[in-house]
Length: 336
Ligand code: PPE
Image (cartoon, rainbow, N blue to C red; front, side, top):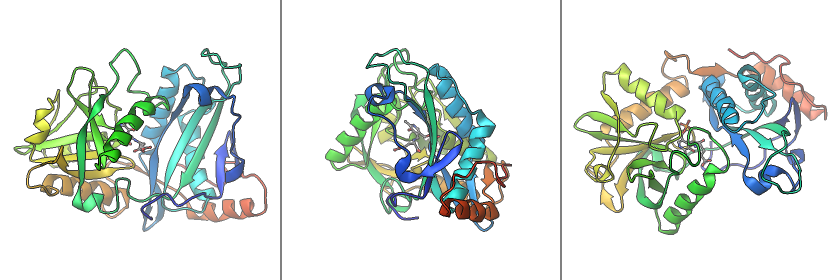
């Protein structure tokens, strides 16, 4: 995959049908445009020797449905239906490796009032996307700062929900970091303890132990975070989910981000203080190798994290789209 998103793909799944990319539009009076009322997911499909495979599809779709529940959004498609829609979208676009963005938006138009009407539209979009935090981020690591913006307090915006509005907070941290020449910002929680990046969870290594902030530190409960915790367990690496004071960042032997977009990105400095040797460390690199090895099928999928995208279905669906007809998801698409 290229380093930057590659532009439009052929079709977008919209409430059970594929529509051409440019036709997946909503009205400017939609509730979501005014109030950020959407929930979404981000997941990746990796190219394996046997074709495309979506990483931890069921867990991502479960989190999507959970996010909708938190925001009182009725869901028209359950976890299995959304899984099928994702597989279908990859196949219909003839992709083997891509980023997937399932999205539930409030499109009701009730003349700009906060109380939403329950009109939800569901989309699944796929596009080609390489590394997130720069070309050499995975191998060389990134330079980050502690953000002057904090994650929301526990009783303000629910951090467990992956909702569009939460990302106004993320944007502030990200823009500040980029304006100051950093790849990313690490936010503290409302109590001043370490939380996460604008779109990534955070881990640190000290004396051979892996530390990561607890779920009550205003973090999104990342699926890559969960994967890394499990992979650490597989090799007997101790993991402590605990409260982390800011200064622990500076004295870490290693520091790294995890996330679907960021995958496993080593951090080489925080606030211009080098972390450890100032180069990606052995724990980060070996967990990265394992994570990406499983995702790309080079290492056996011992945890059952991959959902294959059938190649034959890709060809059929693509042919259908080429003839201008909408392709209904489920036609020849197998979800494991
Ligand atoms: N925290 C936040 C705030 C977050 O947005 C993400 C994902 C994570 C942690 C890691 O979660 P997971 O992907 O389940 O391991 N961020 C998504 C969107 C990034 C973006 O810039 O957009 C992603 O990585 O797809």
